[in-house]
Image (cartoon, rainbow, N blue to C red; front, side):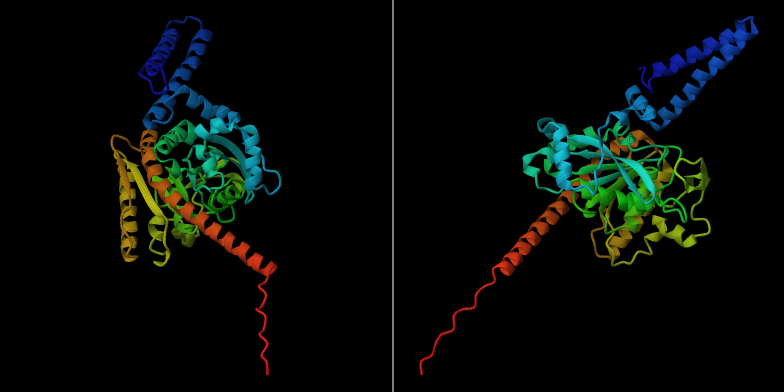
Length: 419
C-alpha cells in the first residue's frame, strides 16, 4: 500500500502537501510562509515523479528504486577486472576462488566488468546461470543473450525493474539444458543520453561497441560461444529498436532477436556535447545530411535492401495493447518479416505477443520477458550444441593429422623377385 505505486503513498503526499498549504495560509510571519511554500514543492514534485513511475509501471518496490537511482545496487555487485588479454580458463579459475560452487550451482552468479573499446569505457553486467557451475556443463560453451535497456535507463533495470534473474531461473527449473549467459551492457553511457546504439558519423560509435565489442569481449572472457547463431539480442523501448537494428545489420553475429515495445525508424538522439562521454546532452538527428545511413539504420526500410540470400535472425515481437503506436509498428514490421520469409521459402511464423491492459511500460516488459526467453533459449541451446560438436570434431581431426605427421606410416617392404 505504501510502495512507490501504492495508494497509501499517494494519499500521504496529498496530505503532506495540503498541510503545508494550510500552514502557508495560517502562518502570520512571512518567514514561515516562505518556508512552508518551499517545503510544499517537495511533496508536489514527489507526487509528479510517483505519477510518472506509476504510469510506466517501472519501480514496484522502494528497494528497487533506491538501488537503481543511487547506484547502490551496482556497488554491491562483484566486479571482475581482466588482467591482460584474459581467457576462459583463467576466468573460470578466478571465479572459482570467489564463489561457492554449491551455492552458485543453484542460483547462478552475477558480476560486472568494464569494457574499454571504440574509445568508450562502460560497465557490463553478466549473469552466469547455475549450469555454468555444474559438472555436467564443465566443458560446455554456453549460448549468450545480450539484453539492451531503454532510455533513460541503465543495465541495472533488467535486475531491479524486469526481475530478469528470477524469471530466468523459473524457466531453467523446467528446462535446465536451455541455460544461457545473460549480458547486460550500458548502451548509452549515462541516463542523460539516448544514443540508440547508433554509429554517429564523426561521433560516438555506439553500435560498434554494443554489437561487436561487447560480444567479442565476453566470448574471449567467459565460456560462451563466439558471436553467431548461438547469440541472441533483445531489448525494450529504445533497446528494442537497438535489437532490431543490430540484428538487421549484423545477421551473422546473432541467431535470434527479441523486440519489446520497440520502434523501427530512429528518432532524435540525446548525445553528449562534442561527442565526448560526460558532456552536456543535446538532442539531434545524427543522420541529418546522411540519408543513406538513415535508411540503413531504419529496419522498417532497410529490410527491403538486405539481399534475399541473407538469412536474418529469427524475430520475436511484443507490444502493450494500449499503446497503439507500438502495436502498429510491431505488426507492420512482422508483416515485412513474413513477406521476406515467404520469398525465402522459409516458415513464416514470427511470434508476436500483445500484452493486454498495458502500454509502453514496465508491466508489459515483465509480462513479455518470460515468453521471449522461453522462445529464445531452446534455439540458442541447439546452436551451441552444434557448435560444440563441430569444434570437438575439428579438434579430433587436428589431433589425428598431428599424429600422422609425427608418426608417418612406413611404406610396405618391397618383395624380392627371384630370376
